[in-house]
Amino acid sequence: MTSSTHDAVEREWQRLGSTGTWWTGKERVAIAAEYRAARLQQKSTQTILSEAAVEAVHKIASKPHTVDQEWIQSCHDRDLAPFPMVELMAIVALLSAVDTYAEGIGVELRTLPEPEQVSPTETPAREVPDNARINAGWLPTVGRASAAVCMSAVPDEQAAWEDLHTHLYLSIDEMRDLDFTKDLHRSQIELLASRTSLYNDCFY
Amino acid sequence: MAHAGMLRASCESVGINLDIDVVVDPTRPCDVEHCRELIEFADALLGREFDRLTIARQALSALIGQKGVARAAAIVANFQMMNRALDTIGATFGDKLPSRVRALAESFGVSPPAHWSKE
Image (cartoon, rainbow over all chains, first blue to last red; front, side, top):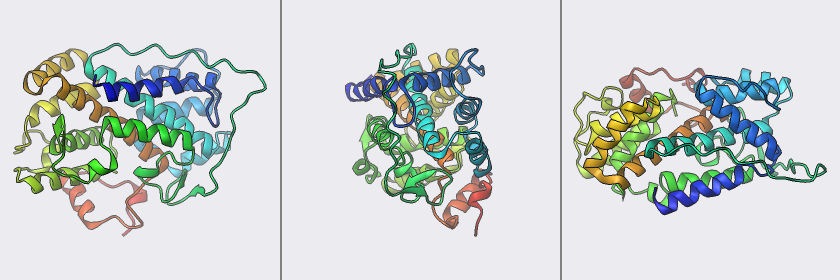
């Protein structure tokens, strides 16, 4: 593992069990545990998550290409609102990167962290960015729903995404260079990116 | 589709011969260095076929070293993340499906999801 990638993964790991914007540390770790179960095509036998949240983790983990407006609305109808959904998606997506990377380099998956211990009165801030709204997608974003702003409705998750994305893939500046080499040539990098998207049925 | 477009652009920019359909059919002509080994590694990793992955990792490592393997793993990992994020938020390239993207999709034999299909 290169040191900068290792450091980025470590930073994400430290965040996982901390209080989020919409979910407690305990809930965030429960989402992560459900993601790990979904990878094994199982369900956790015990969870503190709602039925809708469990369903969301499994869908995003295993069949993200089947997410649509109607399903997002059905989750909302079951008290899984769009902003918490963005954070849930972020936990699943970021952990999918961390776990795939570990398996790729041939190391054991890390045991999930213990949730941060907080006072019972300390709750997630539930802050919404002023300009986050539905903008051409089906979950809120700051700006048109696209890769660059995919987690922007929850700024802490967006920052974590930017950190991990830069270290796993390329920075925005590096992306402009079609002849860039970062251990692999850009053509090799994009071949892997394309093959992965094909595997996941991601049209984007 | 975005990254298949970038693959083609990167190859064109440095004169690498590429049949873009190699993304869906690894037997197609492709002069991207170690193309077959990279695809084999990605497929084994994505499918979580660990015996196959061990062999693919060793084969790739012999060609590009451990740093190269780590980078390959990082790229696959990144797009596991991106695919989940983009599909969950319902991202598209714009109000209309660009014609170049439509052509690429047709080449791959992939149909755009319903929300991408506006002309």
